[in-house]
Length: 299
Image (cartoon, rainbow, N blue to C red; front, side, top):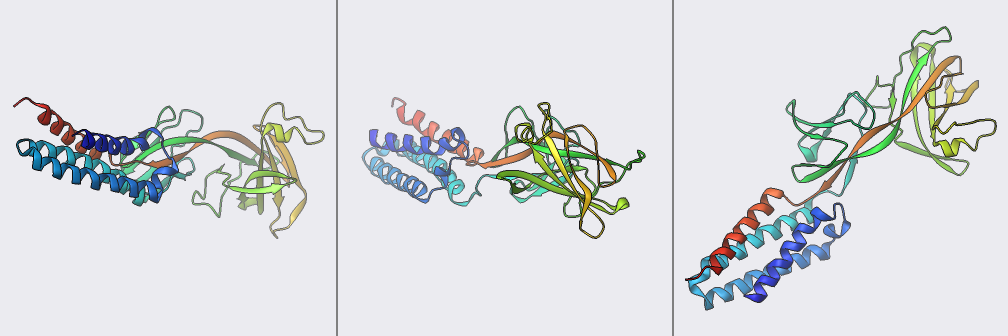
């Protein structure tokens, strides 16, 4: 029984490890899952031999082996067939379909460090993913990862509000730039995005600088804030002569014949980390525990 117990414990530890080391690539490695499968085979073989020697306790030995097998198979299924860790980015006020969650991620309009992203199925919120702690959603642990985004405000020179559109984004009318593209300029890798001002026939490229990067600009004081560089093209797609300006977060600047301001704020992406099915693992552990209790009873 000692060998069977040792093998069973090894399977349980290996199956529970993904919960402790979330996202570790080890659990997707082929050799890891082959080794786990080999342990299951050894458990079943030893359980069969043990039942022949201890026929009176055969049901309990079988329960131990069956429960451990369920636990191991749940871990192998996650390791071999679950997707890798992924990140889902959404604009404020949008819903992003996520097939792995069998629903949508509903991103709220609010920005800041206390945003809760909802998981919706058939129009009903079934779970929330707060900033304070991860949430289990099906066979995934979902957690927030803070990102820096740029909320843009545009006005004419006489103060009339201008509509901001993002023709290449799913959030067409959102004034929030998600800054998902990167571009290297002067040795610096910068987040980049763009938007349009249809009423003024302007296309604006947005480059995001940290306050440390912005501090390197000549005759510019970042005052400890992030900064944004605007590059404005005219209706013909050509850069305007007065179409480049840099501004501190929250401060307006006149560029390309319009007044632009950008607030650099935090807005979460959702990171999905696959884990073995909790109901299956719990079921297997309960069956094994019942087998252990039955096996150790005095006859």
